[in-house]
Amino acid sequence: MLQPNLNRWIDDNQLLLKQLKMMLSCPRYMVLVALMALLAADPTNAFWNTKKKEPEVKKEEPPAVAEAAVVTEPVVEEEKRTLEADVPVEYGVDISYPMHKATVSTNYPWLPHNVDPTIPVPPEYEGMPIQPLGDRQGFFDKYMAGCVESYGESCYRNERDRIEMNVRQIQSMINYTETGFLKIKAPERVFKLLRDFWEANKDKAKNEDWPAG
Image 1 (cartoon, rainbow, N blue to C red):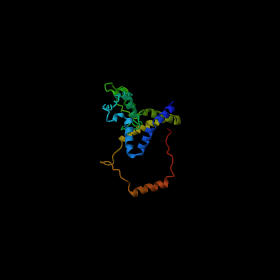
Image 2 (image 1 turned 60 degrees about the vertical axis):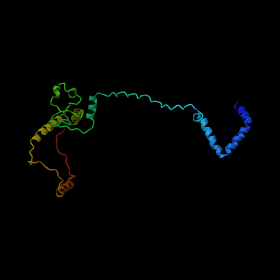
Image 3 (image 1 turned 90 degrees about the vertical axis):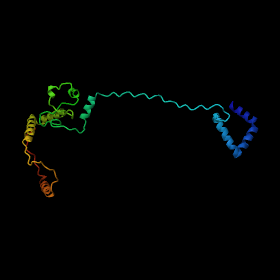
Image 4 (image 1 turned 45 degrees about the vertical axis):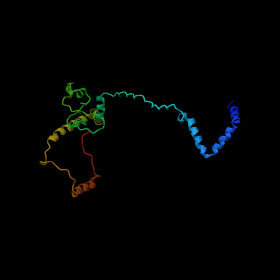
């Protein structure tokens, strides 16, 4: 249907097509053709158009929806994970390993009496320092179980002797000077004596005779 109508229009407008062909061959008419194409694309640009062009209305974005509050675990659990992580912390004896007592501290920061000061301290935790390293008692119990499995009950006796010596030996130490000591690099002649001795005897090591466990 479209092709016959197009052919009929061409036949009826032969004169118009010839005039248009002549105009296109002339450069000054090219500007007119471009202007006509512009007006055809947007008639509102025509000077005879008295209708005001509607200002472009900026589409407003919908108001941002506030993000839902992230539900986290209790602060106590977060503190527990932080303190049990491998981060530098300061602590004294009987925290990482038994030194003055047969057990390490199990007074964890996340226990109720450490979180809420209004809660009384249970008797088993009175005087026990805070344990920032996690379940070190479990680590020690596993270590001792392996010792007993290999060497028997003598492991407990040797541990008791070790702890007693830790407590007794330190308090029996005497200062050699009133001002303490100074750490310096060993003089070369002194270090040479140590190095020569090591080189001469490093292959003559012998196992020390210690009781099992």
